[in-house]
Length: 114
Image (cartoon, rainbow, N blue to C red):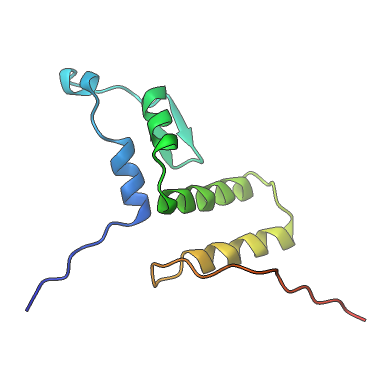
């Protein structure tokens, strides 16, 4: 029986890209400390790494960044109750267990009470 190939999550892919050793890291014993953090989850060690990540961003990484931005914004108190509920549902829809983003084309349905 063939073995299942393990697929990486988007978070693992982002961390892998940002943690690739630079020339400085391979020559140093300790490695540099992060100079910044995006959305309380992604550390970067220098501006070149950050710029490379931004310039080479994949759709999966973009989706991951949007979800993390929404979570960080909510934890900082940026949303009201209804907005938080809506963002939470959108995150669940986009990060469904199937691994594939759902089709979110079209206009949202708005119900008006009469």
